[in-house]
Length: 368
Image: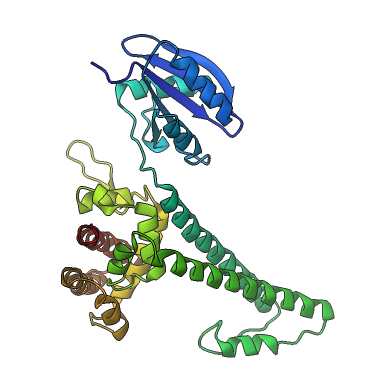
């Protein structure tokens, strides 16, 4: 016997929600459209429960976040937020409307063919918002720096030093002179923009450091920092985006979730594999690929890594050192075989994900 008697598909938009209901063993009908407000949703739940039915809601993950999910949860209703990319679709369908989408969601939800996404808690989501805000500020900082350098390059000013954005580079920037006063103003505005973005990045990084110290997941973050290339920001990003690493049954599942496994299009006797799928969480994939580049150097325990590792258990230290030996050797091996550097970094990031999964199991067990 089915647990629920009505399966409700919601096509959610900023202003409206299209509602369809699939009865257990019965028809699928379109209920109509309601405004996207807490009052209207509460009224809808009361209307659908009028005959004593047990309800199960679903809607696609999107820009609306998890507000509707939490509201339905507070009303003690079952709800799933489903992955849009994994919704089965007929290749021949060329008509898409809110009505059709809600009916399809209700029908597929009743059949059990939808894949639910992981829902973070409110504290977890707040930490994730903080790391994503820092990532956005870094993007603005890179854009501001590029605009400044492009402006200087257009007028023949090029820095002769080895490294940019050092104190020596800033002193050089402050000494650049233009013949036209307005161009001097443009230079100063570009420089002020870079400094403002840098200050915002530093401020958000301080907020992240303060937020994680008393966070329940701090032992996991601290354990991940024992890995080479995984700084505080990278570790916080992994934990904030993925949550409890124990929800992944094995390391390959986590690799596939992050889109770090090769794509494949094989048929019959022909096997064809391509680049990584790039499915799933792009934020974690980015920080892991960046961390993978540190393994191009020989394996060694630096003073910084040693201090980080000493704060963790012996099991975590053993995993971290085994990871460094394995990945450094793997990086050299793939490079000597003629693989492109970007391919090598993706392969190292995939294997690094396996060690992160292993440390996550140890850290979570130790924390409990």
